Every structure is written in C-alpha cells, then in structure tokens.
Image (cartoon, rainbow, N blue to C red; front, side, top):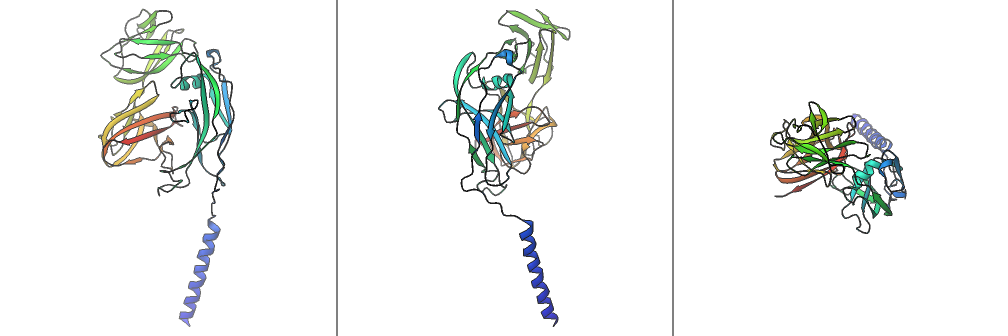
Length: 348
C-alpha cells in the first residue's frame, strides 16, 4: 500500500513540475524573415557653421523579429556605391524612430571620412544588431549576433571646414578646431613635457601662448602638464586655455599590470577617431578605461558578448594568450553613458 501511495505522489509531482514549466516559460518564436529597420527621412545635409547648434533628425522604423527584443541600432554612412565596405558610425543607441544629432557633431564625424568645403554623394543606413542569447556561439548569440540593415538612402552632403589652431613645437602636426567658428577650440592632442608649444591661427597668422595661467597673443610657450594624450580647450575671446588628461588604456588580468594602474595606454588616430594598441596578453580578461580610473570604463553590455556594443561598467572581455592589435571606436564619449565598439585581432 505504501508503495502504491509513493508512486501516486511521485506521479502527481511530475505533473505539477511540467505544468509549472509550461506556465512559467513562454516560447519565443522568431519570424522566418524578420522585418528589417527602415530609414524613412533624412534632414537637409547642406551643413553650415552658423547652424552648428541646430538639431538634425533622422527618422526610421525598428527591426521586427516577431517578438519584443533588445536591439542596438547604428546610423552609418559611406561613400555612395561602396556597399558600406568602410562605413563611419554616425550614431548608436537603443531606438531607431528618432535619431537626433547637432549640425556641428555630424559635421565633425563625417569629416573623418569625407572632404570639407565640398559636396559628396553619401549613402546612409540604419543597422540593427539583435542578440537573442549569449554564450553558445550559435546564430543570434553574442559572438554571432543577428544583424539587419535598412535599404540605403542616398543624399548629397556638404561639409564645412573648421577654423583651427595649429600646435607649434609639440613634435608632431596637430591642431584643435572650432566646431562653431566662435573662437572656442577643442581637440585631443599628444603632448610631451619636454616639448612646450605655442598655437598659431593660420587664417590670421596670429600666435598665442601663455601669460601665467592665461592665454596671450605672442605669449610664452605652454608647458604640458604630463606626457600623453590630453584634451586642449582654447577660448581666444576670453583668452583662456585648459589642458586635461585624456588617456584611454587597457586594463585587466590579461594585461602586464593586471588590474593595477598604470594601464596600457592606447594611441589615438585623429584622422579616423580611433584608439589602438598592439601588445602581448595572457589568458585573462580586459576592459577599457579613461585615465587609470573606473568612473569611465567600457566592457560588454551586461548580458551580451558583442564587441560592437560596449557600454559603461560593462562585463569583462575574455581573451586567450597571444599578441593582439586592438582598436577601439568611442561612439558615445560622455559618461556615465559612454559606449563604443572594438576589434580584437590576434597576430600570433
């Protein structure tokens, strides 16, 4: 009798288990042909410096895979007819319906790829990257995400060249630019404490230097506070300047200093707007951070393993031992919402 009761109770328990699973989980079914995003309207892309603060809007529609999904969207541009073989990322975010960017920001981004003071035929698209799950390597997972692109939309784009100040004596050709042409200049520059510099306006042939902590016409050479990459801000109206460290580094158990500073400093390429480094790594993990501190850092977006979708305070990126060339593109520079993408190429 006891045996029969035990069998009966076990049977009821199994029914309850399967019934509970059926209620708790819902099957997610993906469309056999998911609906790609679309790029519906583009703003007027005859850009002018006087409109630098004006907000432009690109309007699109999201991807529809047949269920509510987390998607990262990219607004990309390329030379007409090149099929996005070498695109520039204009914007990245989590929605595609209203993509907004200022004239000055768009002009600065597109100048990395297209000439100033000229009209160029440019193709635009919205690309949506969808990660269903992570960790298995199967289609749709973080290492092999689904990607859906809108039909390209062509536009004539006219960019304006930026007023600039050239750094004289810094050891390399570099400059800071004024996005609005309002006498305020900014840019990333590589400085050396052994090479003080002055600033030259090539349009007016005016030379600027230091007078104590202030800016002065024909002033003394400016002494760099440290060696490495910095952000230099100059205001020729208020006659002020400031220099702040801006050094992107690689940190983690795979790097020579592990999780301790100093980080492995990356080199910036002003022409492409990318950071890169070639170094030996051991089995372990890496992340990117700014100025050897954690206030600004990039890793995998939590729950994903997609190198095109790096985010603030993200998860560590695992690597195996070898020599690598790593290139980082920062798509959102401002914290605490910094974001970016990277490529990790193993050389041996």
